[in-house]
Image (tube, rainbow, N blue to C red; front, side, top):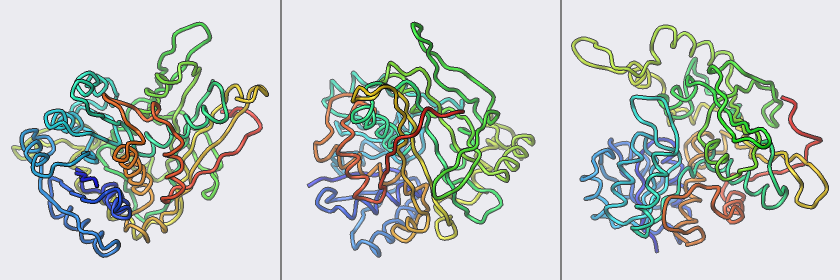
Length: 408
C-alpha cells in the first residue's frame, strides 16, 4: 500500500492521476495539491467519473516550504510527485529533505529570472538526499524521460556504444486555435526562444556545447502517422544528462516541430516584447510580459476536446552494434493519438505523453523496482521494466533498424 502526493493541477497532473487511479494496487491513496484547489477538485471529479476512485485535494503554494512540510506531515506520503512549474523544483525538494520523503519530477529546475534550465542545481542535492536515505528521480516525463529510457534501452540491447544521437519530437496535432501551446505557455515559450545548443565531441577531445540562434536551424523529417514536418534544433535538458551518462557521445541533438503559423505568431510576440521575462511597470504594478501572455492564451488542459491527430516522439542512435556486426543505426519511437488520450483521460496527447511516464516512474519507485539514495536521472535506471510498462499503459513503442546515420 502506497500513499502519494501529486503537486500541480495542469493537464499532465490530470493524466498522471487518472493513470494512478487505474492501478489501485500500487497507488492506494492519492492526494492532489495545487495553488488553485478548484483545479484539483475538477481533476478529482473527472477521475471519480472515469475510474471510480476518490482523490483528496488541497490548496498549497509549492514555493512555501514550511506550508508544504506541514502538508506532507499531514498526508504522510511515500512519494511526492512534482508536476508543478520548474521554478518550484528546489522548494519541493527542500520539503522532501525535511520530511524524509522520496521525490520525482518531469522537468529540471529553472530560475524565474533567467531562461536557463540545467540539472546542476538539482544534482547539487545528491549528497543531502543520500544522507537522508531518500531518492530523487529527475525528469520522468517523455522528453526528458522516455527519450532517455529509449536511448539506454538501445545501448543495452542493440548498441555497444552510441556515437550520434538525435531526439525528434513531433506534435502533429491540430487544436483549432490561432495560437496556443500544448503545455504551460510560459515554460514552452521560454524554451523555444532560448538559444539552441547541442553537444559535440571530437575524438581525443573533451566535449562541449555548440550554440546557435533560436529557431534558425531546421530540417524536414517524414514522421509516421503525421507526415513531413519542419523540425527545429533546440536545447533540451536531457542532452545534458545523456552527454554525462554516455561519455562516448560525439554528437547529441534535440529537434522539435513547429508549424508556420506558430512561428509567425511567436515572431510577432517576440518583436512586440510579449515574450520578455523582465518585470515592467503597468498601471503602477510590476508585471512580467510572458506571464501576462500565458494568462490570456488558451490553457493547455482545455485543448483536449478540440485536438486531433498524433504525436510522434523518438530517438535515432548510431553506434557500434552489440553483436559485433559493425556500425548500425536504430530508430525507436512512440506514436500517440490525441483523440485516444482525450477519450481515456479528458486530456490531449502532449499531456498524456508526459503524465503516463510520471505515473510509471512513480510505480517504479514505490514498488522498489528502481531504488537508490541520492539524486538520479533516468539514464541511471534499468530501462527494461519501464519499457514494459509503456507498452501496457498507453504508450507502445516500436524500434527499427535504418539504412545508416541521419543525413542532416
